[in-house]
Length: 323
Ligand SMILES: *Cc1c(COP(=O)(O)O)cnc(C)c1O
Image (cartoon, rainbow, N blue to C red; front, side):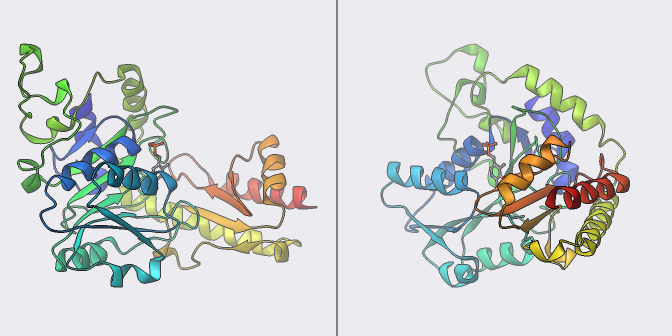
């Protein structure tokens, strides 16, 4: 499953066969890749990431720095990232589509900037995969991670994935060197020898039932062109925004996602003074979004499953509950 499902999701992110492994969770996959990069740190000391990034990304990196005290985790606001990425930077860790605002990086330009100072990048694709086209190969991305339970709908507990560009695979030595990442696990040898290719990032026994559910979810993507998924996502979002702004109560809601769809992923967030209570009421009526403290209503638009009439109904109900 780990390699076979990896090859199935690879086309969704512009990866080649043998570059993606489905395993563990996003958090653990981040630790696995960041710690393996840390082994290659040479004289570089800095890991740069964004303040306000999804918390696990910050927490995992800081945990790694406790283990490797020479490493310095520098978390800065988005506007200060370019300046923070310098010749002392080993690694940059960024989330392509922001979990709160849906603001999206120019993945290719940022990757090129990171490479221009000789650093590596790990992209977190949790809010990208299955919702919009990503072309890791074209951008020459080093590493990526993500989950399969958001837009891929793999279900609760669905495993994460990691991507390692092919030319980096042979020298990237796993720190979590579990037996299933060994070249010959069933020889039960005393000395670990990493498996060739992406398989070395396997760790322990995989949760087979969770993979089986994910495989079923991936069937929905067979023959689906991600560009058309993206087009529908943008149309759903445009309709959602237009209908919200037509509500009599529109002035109590403020769109915090970028209005320009080219700079936005596939969810929409609106600020509202009483967002927690409003979302509770929406969920009771079957409109299942998220409340993100302190004041955000977040609506995920999964293009393969959601219809335009669902958007229409959801905004109608939002208006009624605001009343
Ligand atoms: C959802 C999400 C995660 C989740 O990490 P898990 O280890 O799968 O719980 C990580 N990063 C980002 C950016 C996310 O949005």
